[in-house]
Amino acid sequence: MIIFENHVMKNHSNMKVGGVAKRFIYIEDKNELKEVFDKYENIFLIGNGTNTLIDDEELDITFVSLKKLDKVEEVAEGLVRVEAGLDFNKLISFMNLNNYTGLENLAGIPGSVGGLVYMNGGAYGSEIFDCIKEIEIFDDNHEIRTLKRDEVGFSYRHTEIQAKKWVIISATFEFKRGFDLQKVIEIQALRESKQPLDKPNLGSTFKNPSGDFSARLISEAGLKGTKIGGAQVSEKHPNFIVNDGTATFKDILNILATVKSTIKEKYNIQLEEEIIILKNKSR
Ligand SMILES: Cc1cc2nc3c(=O)[nH]c(=O)nc-3n(C[C@H](O)[C@H](O)[C@H](O)COP(=O)(O)OP(=O)(O)OC[C@H]3O[C@@H](n4cnc5c(N)ncnc54)[C@H](O)[C@@H]3O)c2cc1C
Image 1 (cartoon, protein in one colour):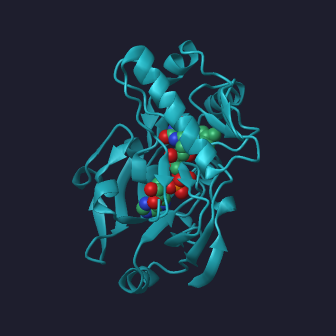
Image 2 (cartoon, helix red, strand yellow):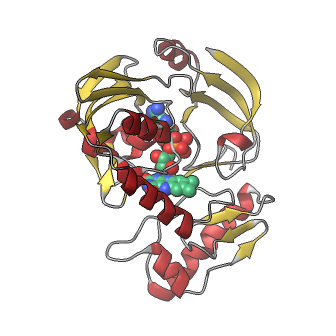
């Protein structure tokens, strides 16, 4: 493993905000997880940081990254084992190269495979669990186990991995042949036309309330473009908060609070964050 003390976290979050962490560890072999979890407390698994807002104070946290576990291999016809640290779009490239189909609708999601499995990420009617056969985890008893798909509780943007605090080491996918490159091109063009990809952001900020869309509510409430410090409700996609390069953690918390209180006041709807907010203990 590689250990850094006093590690700057700003570039580990796609929002480009983050303080100095007590410790940052790159795992190089899955068997190192036991040593790390036995030794350290207050651990946070970080993938590509595309869904995680990190406090910009000093962080009494040990961050653990599986980015160096990024192997993807065909283990049998139609079965592909992928380590959690692999960038999801590299899996899409592997599928293209090997003519496998099933996850094209998710193309362009900037997370790691581990991050997507953790929250059953998805887009345009598909989700990552659609193609999962089994996952390999490091569990709450500090043991490595393999669970079949039907042994894992999952639903829309949710898995039991979250409450159990398991570490995802790898996932084995079951694919059919027939990669749809045209679909990937269309989906990526759609993302580029609808999302403010030129500025740091964390994707959709709020979960959609039942029967409605957060983006619609935020837009209708006239909040598009609202700015606090360096944080802004995107003009292009109202459910995205963007950083103009100068935003602090507090600016972002303030803009989240403003959006939530306005929507509550106007529509009596309590919006809930989809992004993960990692606050230092002292807050
Ligand atoms: C421009 C943009 C567009 C996006 N579009 C979509 C979309 O269409 N659909 C969608 O679902 N999401 C979308 N997202 C959000 C984000 O990309 C996904 O939630 C993704 O799954 C997060 O992966 P990550 O590796 O970046 O996770 P991180 O932000 O690093 O972590 C997220 C959570 O996963 C946990 N985690 C990460 N790796 C592991 C692991 N190996 N084991 C256990 N837990 C782990 C972390 O502890 C954390 O709690 C978008 C984000 C951006 C910035």
